[in-house]
Image 1: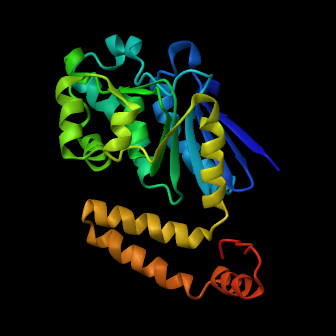
Image 2: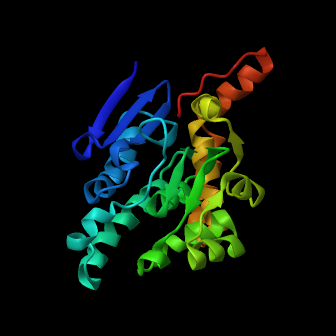
Length: 267
């Protein structure tokens, strides 16, 4: 059964079916620019997808047929980001949105087409896997606007782009093309525009068919290594150990012996 929900007055939409979640930045009239309300809603949408709708993987994409996201809605900056005090409040909601994706217990896939700028680029950078149309364009124009990109989110650019490409993106503000980002490892694959949705769905369904506890343990372990976080590593080890006592491990062994596909329940 397909489940759906909406947040931020419908500008964030969430769907889940057979373990695959979909989170849509649905503001296509403004190239899916992310309003302050949308930033605040992203953690709620992520939580609803994995905790209530049962998503085992989440695909993050932009509404409409042309763009992923132009980033934060600059039209709001005159009021909501006009000085350091308001910027701190605004960027706290940015950080919570990035953190919700980074810390989600399920893998998050960014499916990117068209423009992927600024905060939209940041949302893609914090995802676990990224695939894009071959003509997608990426940029962090903060330096060209005279502002600084949130410091805690820079870590996601360094991890996903690598040190040199992250510096190039942040220092120049210049656009980068999908083939460049495939070469540097930011993207796992590029595809033609009419195949993006299908490729993302195939990847998501493949992940969703696997054991949820195994996925959670793997994501935690990857985060622990990337962040050099010993507490996360210990948590990953604990969850990893629990998999050996799980019903899913018994099901996996039985399915292998019986030469059939396993049916995992997350227990």
